[in-house]
Length: 383
Image (spheres, rainbow, N blue to C red):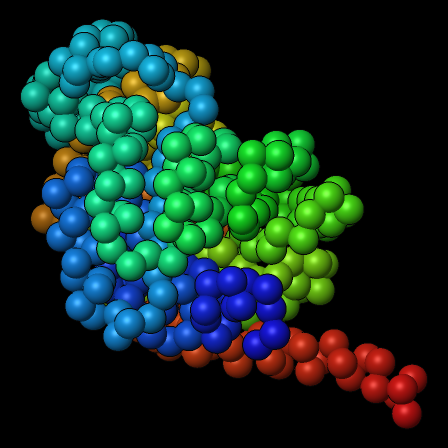
C-alpha cells in the first residue's frame, strides 16, 4: 500500500499490533503488518529472551518495542527500592483487596509484602534508570520502532533512537498532547480514542483523529496511526478516510489463538458486548479501560478507597490479579467472577478466536471491501 507508515517502517500493510505476546508480534510482522512487543512489565533479562526469540522467528521482518516512561508518577526521578515502594501502599488498600478476596472465597492473607514486591517491578521499569536498562536491551536488537505509551518520550529515548535511525512513536489522547509530541520531535503519532483498551483519554476516536490531523498537518507531515476500538479493516479504512495513515491495534489480538491472555478472560471477552468495559483509575492509577467484572465493580463502589497514583496502584493490583487468574484457570468460581484485563470497546466485535495470521488477513480483506464500497458512492458521478 502507498502509506507513509509503510514507507517509514518497511511494511506492506499499515497495521501495527501492540502485544505482550511474542508469538503475536512475530506473526503480525510476517503477515505484512508490524508487531510491537509491550515491554513495560518485563525486566531486562526477560526482554532479552523475548526479543531474541522474535529475532529467530520473525523471518527478518520489522518489529518494534513499546515502553511506559510517564512524565509524571509517584517518586519519579528518585531512587526508590521495591521495599520503599511497597511501604508507600496504605493499609487501607491492602485491606480492601484482602476483604474482596475473602468475599470471593480467596485467602486474603495472600496480599502480603512478598506479593506486593512483585508488583513493584513496574515501578522499577518506569524510572529513568530502569527504562534505560530496557532501552539497552531493545537497541541491541534490530528493532525498527520504539514507542512510549504515556506522555512525550524522555530526551534520552529520542536521542538514542535517532542515533540508531529508529523511529519513535508516542500515544496521545488529546489535541494538545499531539502538539506537545510534535514539539518533542516524535516520528509517529498514535492517536488513541477513549474506546481503546488500557490507558486512554476521554475523546472518541471518531472525533479525535480528525481533530489531531487538522491541528498537526499545518506544522508537520508526521505519520498518524489511529487507535481506539479498531478491530476490523472497515474501521481502519474509516480512520484513514479521516486523515490517518494507518492503525495501531491492541485489543483485537487478545482473543487470538496465540495470545497470552488468560483462558478465562479470553472466554469472557468473546462473550462480551461493547458495553462490558469500564474506564477507571483503579488498575494503574491512571485512567485505563478494562473488562468489567466483580473486581472492577468493587473498585467503583463507594466503599473502595481512592486509587493511588501511578505506579503505587499497580503494586497493589497486579499481584492480586495474577493470583486471581491462576485460581480462575483452576476452576475457582470466585476468581472467575473477579477476573479482568485491559480491553477496549471493540471487544463487542471480537466474537470468535482466530489465529493471528487470519486476523491480519481478515483486516486486509475487510479494508479492501470498505474502500471499494466507498468508491462505489462516487463511481456514477465520475462516469
